[in-house]
Length: 334
Image 1: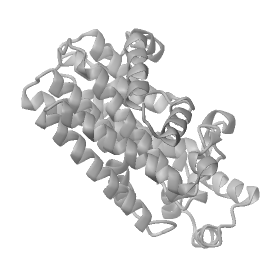
Image 2: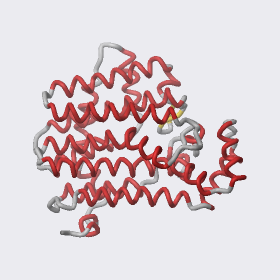
Image 3: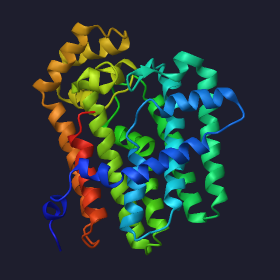
């Protein structure tokens, strides 16, 4: 069996984007086709969202896993559009739930068109995606998407339950991100395996790769919220905390700090007293107690587990590309 290091050494993330550029361009074209509507507001909001950035991470994984599974058709382009429609719908709903003003450095749709329009367009994107899935008449793919959307909703509800709750445990947090983020990434990878008609065990391995990558992605994202360059992140540092989200860096800090420090942090959260001085106080404590590195190490652990899920696959360009994507999830700057 080849080592993880050997399989991972050949491609960079820049190589992967280059290799998949044409397929991702076709995905963009498909998204524009799928977004066409007789309702002007749907067109306006959808176009705004899909031209505001985003790496098309889920479509990339779907394309690469379908190639790994040996698929050589064209349906992966339609399905890559579907998962991006679903992902974008969740962003619309998230921004309403979080009262978010900025996403990817731009005003959120809710700030420009209001909460009602954001919710309804999000619903439209969900149903548009489901209609596309049903039209393909593939029960396994339909089931994968339906289960992912169910889990995503469950994750959102759990996150709402723990809003601002300093007693949240690491187990609670991991379950939330497993449902809210990892579920759709895992489904994207499983769809790739379904297209390639993999045997059940290999479908499971590819899906597990996606789930672990999803966990690493969200862990890294939540940690970058405290340490990334504000201009690159596209939002203010500590934005998750200001929205009442107790993510791994903060909950780890609360478990390690002194009682006096805990009391002060709890008061800041309870009073929503997120002044630059208070955010700086929390960030300094995070570095003091090594919770930033702890969170990144946790993410790296999921990356290594993800790679191990694919070690029985024959070495190939898609495999090397997936390993490069896995490393990128933690090494990225935003």
